[in-house]
Length: 401
Image 1 (spheres, rainbow, N blue to C red):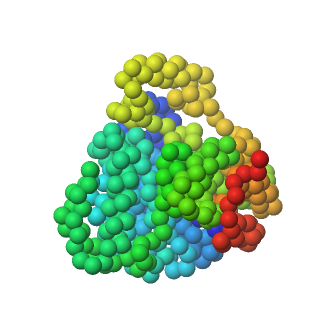
Image 2: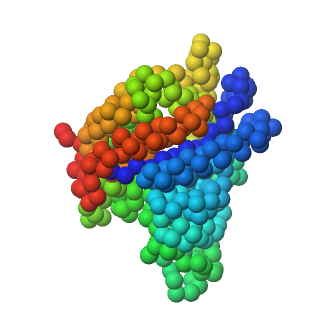
Image 3: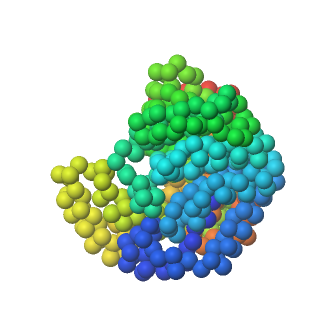
């Protein structure tokens, strides 16, 4: 099993009352609330954490979100370019540029080809559909997002793979009369493709295509449903399913003792309780998200949830979760090295195996020192054990009945 480190560079310094007043941590918070000096410190610290991972053999992930405190990485290609030059040993995954809000997939292909060459062939490419707040921030139409998603991927793949001069692309959503990417990608025909989704329909198509299927902090039951759909799609396409086609993201923190780790790991849950809050106009009320007849019922349900929020719950009815509950649900791996090894092994068995662990290792008010301490312990005490789980080329049979 491979290990991949991700940090979304959150900005946890906005008062919770301000977030509740805006009903969102994304899209509509004024940027005057972001101190650029603090943002610069976060950027430098996170990049240093990536460099530490490079030295310790942990692959790294660059991602992208917009207009919110959940993630300051608003331009994945920019950070990808930095990592492609500075990272010297491990692989780099962009998960990823939000292709459904980019008008020109060929430009995205150029960015990826450049990063692949700059890294001398250590780039992996990941695709995500984008959340509702991204549609607003990206000035994109949420209607037809699925069709745009797949056509953008097809165009990017064609642009990276074609090396015989210009070609024309005339699709349903994208029209490009002159596609000719320079420099050509280092890897042939293109860097490996990933995608992140918990949606079974999308997972089935990923199985047909053979991409790496990433599920984010969904617990065993939902992960099984998503990966079962992937396996079904792979069977339809006549593909053999290997464990390295599956990646799972869990909030991860390693300490010297369980008590020490759990105290710090509590900060990781900031992502769920605060950083993930999105106002309904950026989620369930976006065009195309609900049938017109269902919208009033959805609105009334949200109003009721927001009334409950005043009884000590976060906005939109989000119930605070404890570290113990997060571990039990399989969305967090936290504790001493021995405990974390045991937790990952148990989850690995529950879901029938997977070959890539994505560890979100910093969120909330965690400090740079706390983060690096966990990374070092993970690399020294956990990573060697993981390399014995789902070795390269291992088949993935699914969960035991």
